Length: 434
Image (cartoon, rainbow, N blue to C red; front, side, top):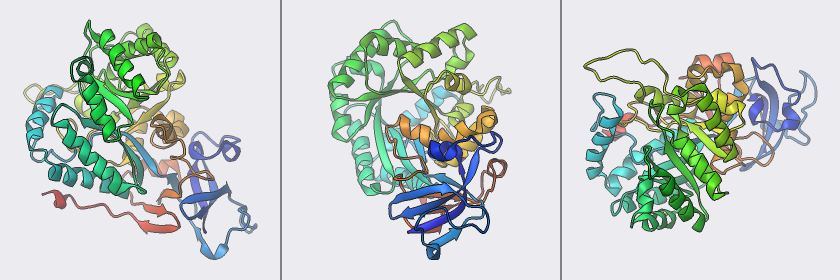
């Protein structure tokens, strides 16, 4: 058993019995002692006053490490990424930064996606995520027949290789309309064959969308699956796929989990429309994943020939969704590809930048959950993303001793706890990809 003493833990990831009464909202964290017993957390208790006996019964002081107030997070949960596209920027850059060019550029690059190529890039991305402290990843997998099978086969291979370290989930990414065509069942069955946890897709607004969503929901229901969709990744007020999905879920009385990623256009709609759509999303029990870094990069962009300052940040209505009780997480999305030139699958960076971009300093407690407990619940892994008895003993130790310090140095180092072992994080070198 290993005892971590005086760990400063965000209250949002602690059991309610420990987190109550609520700490100062400017510093929503508590000094705690954590006893680790192999792969699980044995106990968590508030730290004793200086000189008092350790509050964790039976904890061996010989195997105790005094963290002196260093911040400790549970292993991160990155709820929406694209491993098959990752690290293609050097050979397939997006020279205008436009969404349309991203689609065209990666469509050309996809011709060179072999098992070896995807394994090399996606494997590197997972190693980065691991060294940053992420312990669960949900990736969307490009799925057009017949070539989509190799993408899924590689992700299935990686899932096995990382089992016990990173829980890797997969969701197919294709046009929602494709499920209504002759290949609809085949796409679903192919995805399920390789262990997909939900069906996914994207669609623009169209008169056929309600019918297409009804068909997709029927296919998912027949297979006992939920949905994880890309919706409204643009700045057009007329794009209301989120609303259409919510209406379809209610209309079909669909009870399996439904996740909608992006939801950018919601932020540029009329206030009354925003409120009614959010109410529908809540009624439909939709879960939302915001992708602040990628959408900040893509949305409201003009090409290099007419550059100008963007008028909006590209992110969805995070505060309003949280206020309405809609489950919400933030995630990395694309990493070093034509949709987002930067990134490193670092969920701590996602958290820090989300606080800055969305003014989540007004609800710091909730901000931590967006990449830990709330994210874990959204992807169906409720035992993860928490510092609690029975949770995995996979923790991330930062040198920061307050939220202010944590938010001020995004690039600071960290130590990783796995079981009863502590080590310094060591990120792989980008040179491996050259």
